[in-house]
View 1: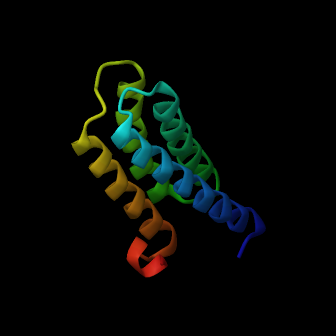
View 2: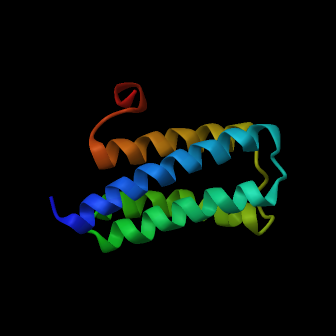
Length: 107
């Protein structure tokens, strides 16, 4: 595998873990702007670096989730249990797009 793509996949794994942590913490603190920012930054980096490394399907999908968190950051959309649940499912889908496995299979 190309070293750049390998580095991206490793970093994306770390970002997905951070995204999951931020989302789970948002369940208890939905108004916390720092957590919203962490989720947005993880998504933004996954999207941008993914596009640069040729993971165009990851970048296109992640862009949609990033847009939702941009609306949350600007105060147009609140953090709700449904948003957190959908975002956790999206995180699992990003993982599947990158590695071809679900969270359950990933362990």
